[in-house]
Structure formats: C-alpha cells, structure tokens
Length: 335
Image 1 (cartoon, one colour):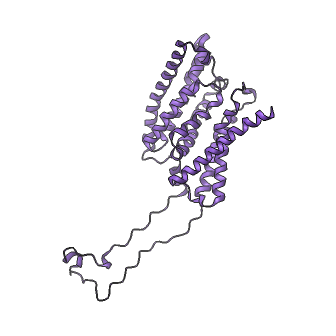
Image 2 (tube, one colour):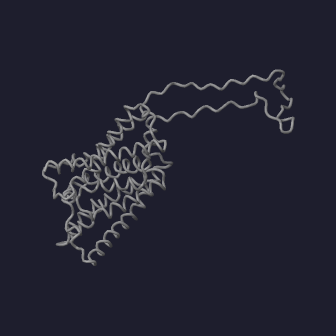
Image 3 (cartoon, rainbow, N blue to C red):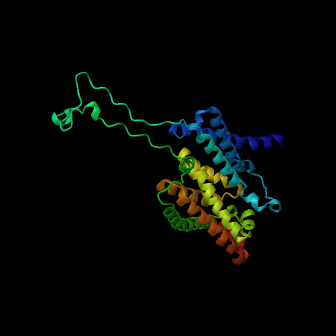
C-alpha cells in the first residue's frame, strides 16, 4: 500500500534527521563545532550530509522490518560491497572540509609594547637591585615583566583531520599491536558468548528464534577470493571505526554511537546477530575511550572480521557436514 510504503521511508528519515540534530546540538554544547560552521550554509549542508548517511547506512534497515526481502546476489558486484563504506568516507571528508577548510587571516605576532613607566621612575642600572630584588615584597618594575609567549602555530589541515577522527597517537605501531592482542581476546569472548546464549535459548525451548542458516550474503562473501575478503575486513575495520568511534562517539557518546553501529548491521535481518554486534561495539568503544585514539579498535575490528571471513565461516560451511550451515549461521552473526 502507498501509505505503508510512505511510513517505511518516513520513519527512518525522521530518525536520521533527529539523530543529525542531536549530533549538531551536542557538538555545539561540547564546543566541538568546527570554525567553518560559523557560516550557516556550511553548518546546514553538513547537517544534511550527516542526516543522509545516517538514513542510508543506519536507519534504512528499519524500513524493512517485517518484510521477507532476500538480496539479489546475481546483481551484486564486488564494487557494490564497498559502496556504503565509500559513502561514509565521502561524507566524513565533506563534513571536515565544510568545517575546517576555511580561510585564515594572516596574523603576525609581535611582542607587546612595554608599558610606560610612571612619572619619576627610572629603570635600574645594571647591577642595581630592582624593587623586587632589593625591597622585601616589592613588585617587579614594568620593564622587567616578560613579554607574552607567541600563540601556538595552528595545526595543518591534514593534522587537523587526523585529530578530528581519532588518528593521532604517540605510537601507531604500539596501538595496532595492542589492538591485535585485545582483538584476539575479543574474538574468543564474543564467540563464547554467542554460543552460550544460543545454548541457553535451546535449553529454554526457543530453538525457533535461532538462525538455521547465515544471511545469504555471508556464504556469498565467504566464496570470494582471499584478497577480496581480506580487503572487506580491512575496509570494515578502518571505515566503520572512523565513522562510529572516531566521528560519532566523541560527539554523541558511547550509548548512541553503539546503537547506531548495531542498527547499521541490522540489514541482515536476523535479530540474534545483535548479541555479538552489541558486545563487539562496546568492546571497541571502551578501547577507544581508554587509548584516546582509534588505531587499536581498527586493528581489533579488522582482525575479528578477517578471522570470521577467512577462517571460521568458510570452515563451518565446508567441513562441519550437515550441520555446517547452521554452525555458520551462529558463528557468522557477529560479522
């Protein structure tokens, strides 16, 4: 029905515009608004860009609730797998340019002029104690007050970009190593949690809510060449962490950025997968809060997806036998 179709678009659109408004107001309240946003047209365009990407990448799956829609894999190309990630990158780049690519007035620093001495006072000659040196409790003469330090040099545009999205770190190599180590632990924790929840549901007689097979997209991706699967894992780690943890988290907080991350993965249409995704998102979020940069989270996220796509899901589909499809369904839920 046309009315139902309108609602399926209107609700995600309202949520996307509402989320963009919250982001804008929160940035203003926390002092995070870029200098370029003093111009209303820049701020308005950035608002629309963020609302658009939130609609397409986060809230659009809500419009599909209750619909049994299977993706047409025959029309899916490798390039389209990266389409949403490219949109995220484009919006972040445009948002940054709107906010920070602004003309700066050239300011030449000169020391402040020395204040004039009161009438009748002279500067002490060399070797003669000043008021501060010779008189207990005396104040230094105006000529003895050091000039103010020059203002710090503004960050270059490139370094400002790194700072805005959480890429600045004392040692990137150390952060990546830490992310690999913690990512291995996160992989174990998440899979054990998923299996424990699944077994608990089975024990309670709720087997029907468990996925009997993975989303159709997962086996399709698992059958792609090794290099493509590795690139998908790297793209997910870098782009999703930059957007959800580097961009959104410092501005709207962990609860909302985690909720958006989970909704962005809801397009698979299997609610059980939200268990693993929520847990992973919280692990990455607190890792970013702890490390004050996103490199460790990028490494952990990339490692998790790579292990799933390169080892776990293909092995479950290939070697587990008749139960392989169901096992892949459970194990692929955290992708």
